[in-house]
Length: 353
Ligand code: NAD
Image 1 (cartoon, protein in one colour):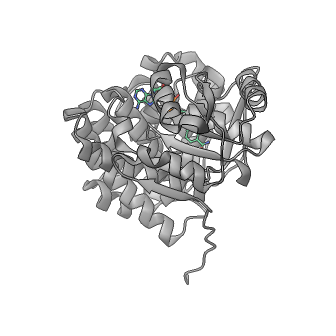
Image 2 (image 1 turned 60 degrees about the vertical axis):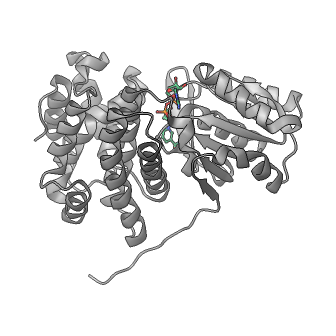
């Protein structure tokens, strides 16, 4: 088959490097913003206040209420506060939760978002928003929520504990894995996926060995940027569908769920995705990438079973039913017995395959 594809570049600026946070006031001014609301999670309020102080008069205030999956009530409070303070933009400092809150404001009020990521989740690179109401998460794509600028400063990730670093990094690798066998994969995005997986696979053991090593943190964040860009450019398949269902239905934690499911979803798909398999073999330096990721999680002390994340075994049939209810693109046909076997292994913490 001859080469044919559509590639859509996203309009955003990326600034990368240790100490880059110092460039934030300049970046705010370059976007023509004068009063920005700083968003962060309650646990990162100190960081949020430090960012606001660095912004001086350009800071309209700090809202330290970002939480997983963006509850609608938090989004409403954030929008009201942005209006009350006369904010003309937001600076989201943190992981996917803080960036998600910025996107929720942008979605209704159109305020530009500058993202300053402190995990490896990748939301800062995507035009995908999410909002949760009555236990149901709605998601959608909208160019308005895509951050205008992203400042990656590895110094801000020095405080990310080893456990969160590994699970968040695995979450990023999952974007690369599914981007490689996506129905809308393109050669340039596959290059980014392979390099992103390689960078994170190199960086994660290094970060666990020495979380204060700025070079290790920079390598991990470089990988996270690439994997986030892959997530933005491609359609995700079985792995993300399962994690979305497990998170939405059973409230399992986002990054640890990705960490547990990824080796199993990849093991299910890799025989049917030879191009992705070859790229991952090069990136990870192992013949069986799924097994290698499962071993890596064990070596780095990350969770390997859905049971330890709080899932009950009798929830498996419900998740299987939801995961096969709507058709979606996947390299290997998604069947109920196939997904059930995958989930039973992931629940018990058995090796994949
Ligand atoms: P998170 O943002 O909820 O952060 C997890 C915890 O880590 C929080 O308590 C936070 O305060 C803490 N933390 C973050 N950075 C830290 C640091 N440097 N030092 C110390 N503590 C730190 O978790 P996440 O995994 O980054 O994001 C998950 C959320 O993002 C989910 O809601 C997920 O659905 C969403 N997400 C969305 C997209 C998208 O494209 N829309 C992509 C990926 C994730």
